Amino acid sequence: LPALEEAARQVAAGQTAAFRTIVEACSERLVRLGARMLGSVTDAEDLVQDAYLRALRALEERQFDGRSSVETWLHRIVSNLAVDQLRARKRRGHTVETDDELLVDKRGNSADTHVALRELDEWMSDLAAEQRVALVLSAMEGYSNAEIASLLDCSEGAVEQRLVRARAVLRQKRNDHG
Amino acid sequence: MTMVDSETAVTERLARLAAQTASVRPSVDFAARVMGQVELSRGGGDWLAQVVRLSKLGVVVASLAAAAGLALAWQNDDSADREEALAYGVMEVFE
Image (cartoon, rainbow over all chains, first blue to last red; front, side, top):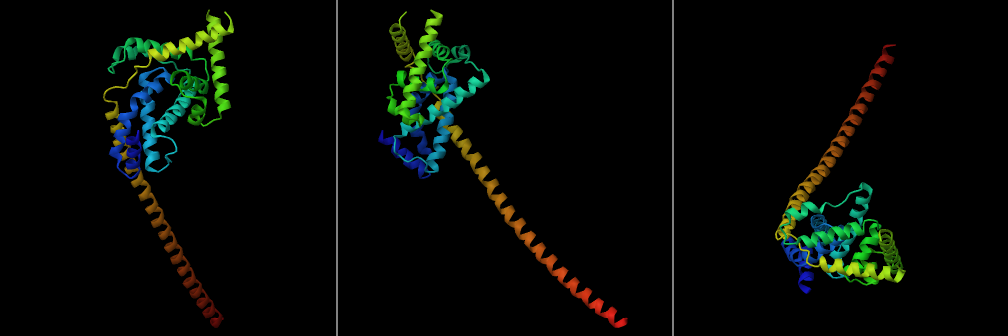
């Protein structure tokens, strides 16, 4: 996606309008990633918006070094924000209310999609935030352990451990519920 | 159920949920909303930067005023000392 790298260069040079190119090209994947991590499209949109504002600031302050692609860098920001949000949710004991989304979705997402997101959210609710995010990146987004380690700024061993523990929790949950 | 069965079940459920959520998409006006927030943050950023700039200027002006006040006080104190010494000399002459 050389257009994104060019847009990033333009934003860094002060042409904020070029940021729209990045937003239009990346939003679908980023919102889907966020929705899988948080179990809600609405929460995902808020998260991705926050990620974009942080990314814009980083580009303007020339903190983006270009070692990864713009899209991978955005995935990193979204993943780390999702970890923070899931941790905060655990502290507050928050659960996602997808009923409202079912009623008011104007995005064209089907009711089945929302039901699947709710199922995913409930199923993964016992996982630690880092385990959940690592599992979504691995099993649903197709990232390798090395890529996840880079995204979450940890070792491959730590990723492996999170995935093993996450699967163990889900296996146990399945056994407990029959 | 064996561990292998459970593991397979977990993998299959993850794959099914991945397929069912593959079509998730943002609102049609999402990009516009994000760019609106960008504009808003620009405005807020400029306002904040202006406040910071004015605050810095205020600190400089206050520092200069304090230095001038100190110099004036020192000067007054010095002339008061001289007047006091002069008065003291006068007193000595009278005594």
